[in-house]
Length: 111
Image 1 (cartoon, rainbow, N blue to C red):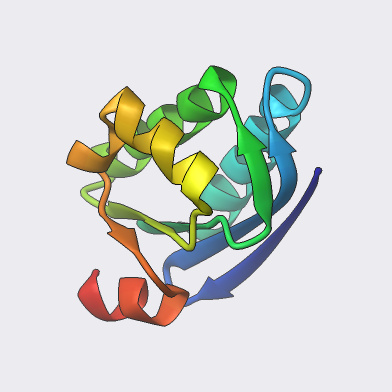
Image 2 (image 1 turned 90 degrees about the vertical axis):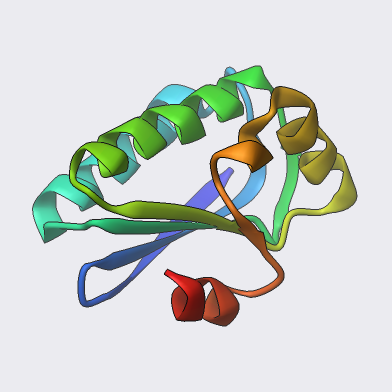
């Protein structure tokens, strides 16, 4: 798993590559929280273009960050999930509270 960040004003784009599962969830959560707190972030975009797999631990990471950002009166979006990851998002019901976009730019335009 590899994670990278891009900041634009108060928006944080989180690119996760590889797998977001019980082996990587804690480290991922800690890194994202550090970036949110350090940069006064109120908009968060998860870019899953290169995410191959996600399990319930990954859903937990997303939900936790969603609650954190909502507490700051902010918004969260997901972009570019592959069909397998999108299926997990839909089964979990996450798509009902966090919008999914085809690109980072479209997410930014709609936040």
